[in-house]
Length: 330
Image 1 (cartoon, rainbow, N blue to C red):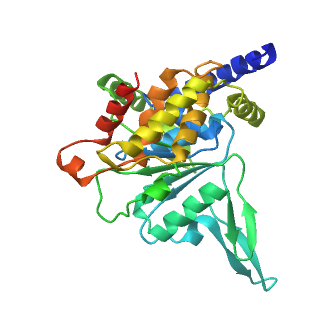
Image 2 (cartoon, helix red, strand yellow; image 1 turned 90 degrees about the vertical axis):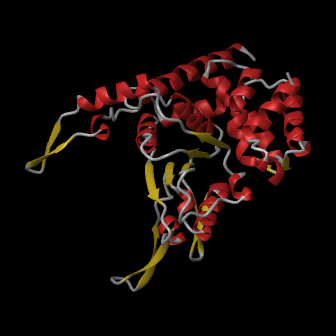
């Protein structure tokens, strides 16, 4: 790597740090989720979040979009949602007696697909197809989605009534699947302290209690050019042949493990390399390291494997199998 590339890495790392610090001013204790969202954004991937409601997912994505100066939209998935509610449709303009295209909420930069497993498979398929192709067809016209385009989907792993499980082929399209956890007592104390400090907001001759959305700093931490530079810098992060060999071995081990009936596709290896490069850049490095692989392995691998019935009956988990595979490679 030459000096120009090294300087670019330093500038980009400083920009990404500023974004993370800006988000942390509003959202408490979700540093890893912010890192995963940035990884997906920098590598044109998508992120699936598994966690119970109330963990600030909507707030986090909204703050992140404003920090990077991107458009943000949220779709609440329900059983009666139609593909046209997401993609858009053709409507008759009564003034001209001609059909015109009304674009749906998918035409944005950051899309929060809340509780994606509550929608019917046809709707899930429409969204996931758009995620992969980055364009949608409405009527006879094909429209490109805005660039960059990132979907952050959520699903509740506890409440399963009235839900449709995402099939493996569709799960594989998510670059990362991160499992959210409850905040620590210290983090929750800070959340309550900040919430107690919120006042009221006078509006339209009345007043409403302020929320975290009302106190957001609406100034971006950088421009879209800063983001483009960061995406270019990811490709300059060095990946050694040894690192590639370790990833190939890891992916192949998931296909041969006796406790797994479904191993990882080649897309898992591609995602690991891309995500590792982005994580290295976020941490100010111009090269990937084993730390990146171990930090990202669960989020890249676990949603792509399936245990055998015997393994499930024996109480074996996917995390246990992955740790076993990783330990054998140390």
